[in-house]
Length: 91
Image 1 (cartoon, rainbow, N blue to C red):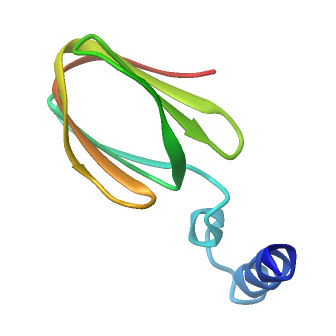
Image 2 (image 1 turned 135 degrees about the vertical axis):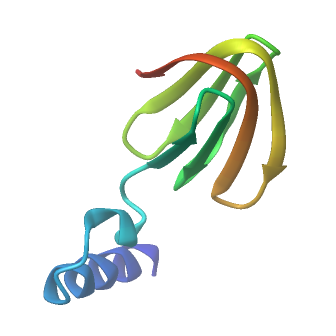
């Protein structure tokens, strides 16, 4: 059932000429300055410390490095992180 849904969502996204992030395939990262980052379309948290947060996504992992990192809000596929963000890296 999931495969049919993914195929239908991908076809619909292409037919409507929407960006890929609407299909849920790609991670969407929004930053506000060096203090806030919002990440959508991720699967889970693989590690969490005040200096490093590692997120698992469908295609690659995303690592946020910094100081005093804190998860402010966390939902099914969306997370908000605050702190002094020094580096964001795909792995």
